[in-house]
Image (cartoon, rainbow, N blue to C red; front, side, top):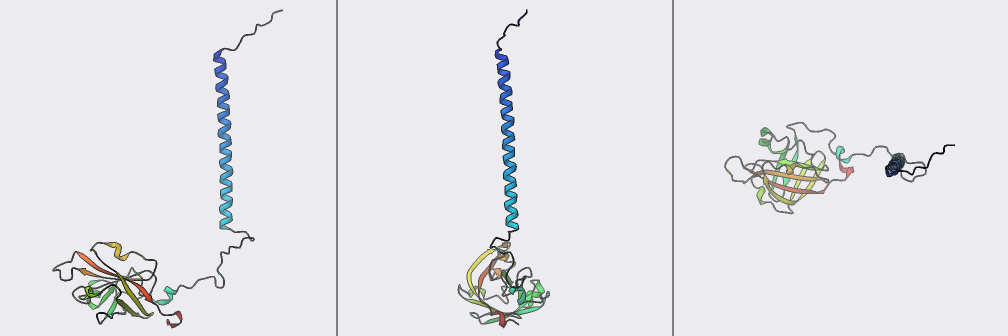
Length: 221
């Protein structure tokens, strides 16, 4: 009877076996990592859903107490927004003994009549940056005499609002930081600079004042 003789594995066969085993382990490892990532993603989604939709057992309430709508005090100040060219109030500067009309708009015709209100800024008394401008050779010819701590007083249909100067700046005429939004009620007053410059002045004289007095809500008509 013929009996096949045992033939030991060659080094090539052993190398091939090791390669196959390594490849199998690699595929298995990738699969486990993939399953782990899917599980983590599912947990994250469930956590996000819980945040967006709290269960009845949570103590966090997404509904305000009382009315479902919170009144906006800034909107209540001016139920009707002024039109271009309207006189919206008076700007008083006690340190200079001046009272100047505030005109809605900063076109040349508006500035001839008084202090112009930049229409893309909020109105006096509202939270944010209210920007007023005027000519250096007319309404604001004495603006350079003001100091830190002096006040601007605006009187409009919404009431009286007092602002205290906290900063004085001289900037380039194209500097847009003059009209940037703020997180509290600010009055920014600007004019061309230097005051006695002949021709188109290259810079702007800017006074930044914070609101220090606002009438109580029951006094606003």
